[in-house]
Image 1 (cartoon, rainbow, N blue to C red):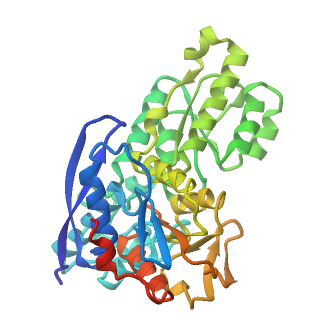
Image 2 (image 1 turned 135 degrees about the vertical axis):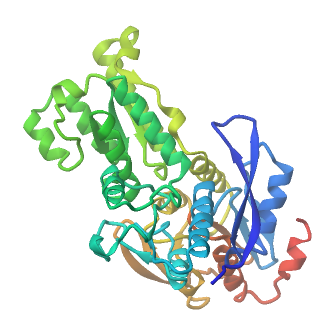
Image 3 (image 1 turned 45 degrees about the vertical axis):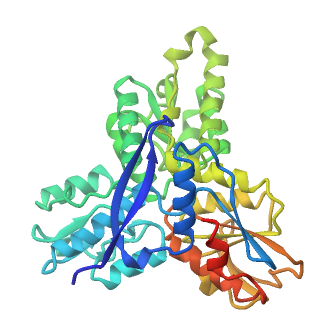
Length: 426
């Protein structure tokens, strides 16, 4: 069955340069956005160099929405979705498999499954389909997070084609390339990421192939690791503190003399930079500023442009006088949880995966990612008029979902301007 498509433009800015490139993706009409897509295009045309990260105000009268300058699908996600639907179109008589979820969004994954794609494993590695069922005639798609060298080589040994529909995000591959360079220069690769996340598992596999590698999730882990840099704790303690987070044969005494930091691209960019700066200071104190280059590699060029843009846009949202924030995205989405984390600094924040979680003008069901549970909040829409709502989403969330959330909220405000009236400005 052929999948209907439309052309979607996306602006790319590489390495924070002033050069921009326009890439045209063909995505299913299912993802077409009539509201936020129109606003994004208008902002893009006016700000090609992406110098303005201020939010967009949509004033409907009794309710006002502040939309982040950048949110929703990034380059890597759109590239992965386009390739996945192309794999379906080009192989109507074959079994088409995904190694795991394409991205961390239930709407996208459900649509792919409804069209016949089968998931081999869950995001945590739980196997759904035995490897014995996968043969050389089958189509296997590598998701945007990438995959481990072990899985890739296993499939190659089974003579399964893995490159034709490899959707690994190019910015993830950029991290792998940087890690490989660090390894060849005898630096130990410190990966800032969540050890169980698919992307971090893939990055760790590639980096461990190139050099000694260890995973830190946050500054607390980094401070623990610094104790081993300084010889303050025993090797036995290291193996306990970083169990299943270091490469084979890792020797803390030898392998922490030269380090460089790379990251899971969906982590908070500011936190990755803070961790890198922290290890830089550790090395300066231990070896002296004059010897820094022999012990620390500057790797800030591995930070993902889309993660930076979305997070910088969220920081700009924190400056508006809003009453609450609604963040839309998959509950297992790392980048979305970090946007929620930022919004929580300023607003009562509700993390929802679709408009269906808004049960009425009085009740909303939302995800507490700190405790991994659904919460129910009553009277979340305050009596204040106009009420001001921050609205944004994660990089794996279709803009159509944001549209649907906005339209659902508008239903509760009588006397609101129509969408078309408000969009005349765009």
